[in-house]
Image (tube, rainbow, N blue to C red; front, side, top):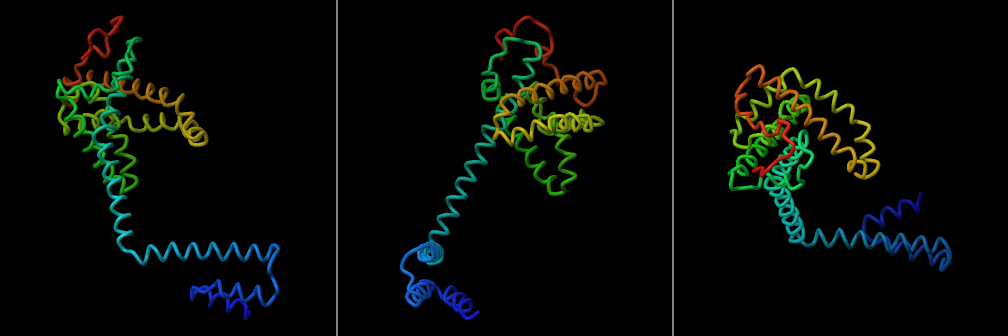
Amino acid sequence: KDNLDKILSQYLSGNMNGFIKEYNEKNNVYSGFIFSAFNFISNSEMEIQNFVKSISDDESKIHSARAVLLIFTSIGILIRILFINPIIVGEKRLFLESLNYKKTKFWTIVYPFKLKKKRYKNIAETMLTVRIYQLLWNITIIGGAIKHYSYLMVPYILAENPHIETKDVIKMSQTMMNGNKWKAFLTDITFLGWEVLNIVTLGLAGLYYNPYYNATFTALYKELREEYKKEELYNFELLNDEKLFNNQEKLEAYP
C-alpha cells in the first residue's frame, strides 16, 4: 500500500523517474526483465508527459492544428460540392445510357461538366441543396431515413434533364417515391450482405457489387419514370430525354 501511494504521488507530481531509480537502487535491480520493464515504463511515461507538456505550453500549436483541420475540412467540402456531387449525377447518366446502349462510353461520367450546356451550375446547386436538407433531416433519425428515399431519384432526374430547377427536381423525386419508398428499402436490404462483405474486404467487393447496385436502382428509376409519365404527375413533361429510353442501335453524337 505504501509503495502504491508513493507511485501515485510521484506520478501525479511528474517525478516518476525518481521513484523508479530509487526502487532500482534499493533492490539492487540493474538488469533483467524488471529493470527493462521499469525503463520502458519510465521512458514511455516521459515521452507522454513531454508530448502533453509541449502542447499545453504552446497554445500556438493548438491554434495551428485547428487551422490545419479547418483547411482540410473546407477543402473536403469544396471537393464534395464541386466534383463528387456532379460526378454522382454523371454516374447515373452512364447507367441510364447503358440500359439501352451497349457502346456507352465511360467518359459519360463527366457529363455534368460540359459547361456549354450550362448544366453544371444547376446540378451542383441542386445536389448541394439536397445534401443540406438530408443533413438537417438526419437530426430526427427516422425523418432522415424517410427523406433519404424521398430524395433518392434526384440524381437520376438531373441525369435525364439537368436544367430542371432545384425545387422542381426535389418535388418530382418526392412525388415519384410516394408509395415506393418501401420498395426501394427492400431493394436496399437485398444488398445488405454485399455491404458487409465490402466492409470485410476493405472495399474490394464493391468493385463487383457497386455496378450491380447502380444498375438495379437505374432499372427502378426507369420503372417509376414510366408510371410517373403515364399518370402525368407533377412536371412529367420535363422527363423528355427519349434518347435514353428508345432502342436505337447506338448512341450517336450524344451531347
